[in-house]
Image (cartoon, rainbow, N blue to C red; front, top):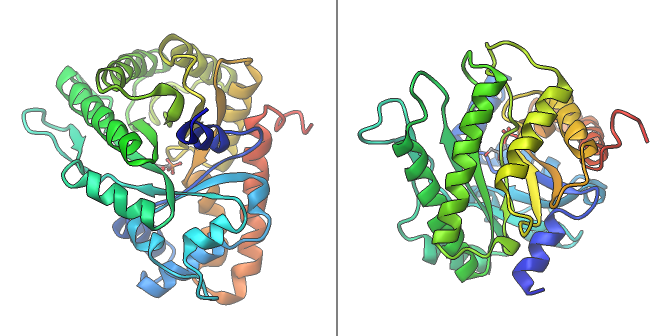
Length: 332
Ligand code: 13P
């Protein structure tokens, strides 16, 4: 195993997963404002310290994904966040895309940007302590969407990003997110996820990406949020079926995003997916909202609530950790 392969394997080692805390300033500000928290640079720093400095998270978290602002910030004791994480054996990840922008010629679709200057940014982030990176492509299901143009542009960018990461010494987390919004059913999401994953792996191969040194971060295969509901086991079966058809066994791990499902549902779905094994790759979490929403709501920007918020964070991580080995529902 080379060092990138070792890093990828460490990110998905048994019972551990990834804490996604890489919301851009705009996104975290919206989440703060919804709770009446003023979004200053200092409060964002305090919030990230609440998460990244919480004692005990290392039992469940293999890696934490940061945003550009956070990777440069320091904890209260003067250590930079990558050092705080490294001291407890947690790998630092960094969001390197610059966001989803409207895709010309494809109304209502986006392409994720950020390839310009990426080689240099990767070098810089490596020097700041990053071991892995993330790039999020966004696909929407709607009438005649996503188009081949939308899928192709996003898959191609993921392929070029992943190749640049590996060249520069970072493990790429490849995230093609299919948004939950819409009134489509489970079968429709399955078909779209199939098209997307097939194209993503075609582009990864075309760009000579080493599949043993990357992590796939997909959304679960689910009906749209206003579509006909599906049960936990059906969602798990559709998700695993789609992955088995498209994700080569050489990929070490699949770390799911939560996509706005809520903590309990995301946990139950991951648990059911894990129980449906054995699979050729590890399955685990790379949740943002499903881990953070409850601790953030407990904290509300107040120092006096840090301890309680950290207790909630730890509990959510315990859920995710148990689910990643299929031991949540059984309480094993
Ligand atoms: P959610 O789990 O909130 O979807 O966030 C994960 C993530 O990293 C999105 O890019």
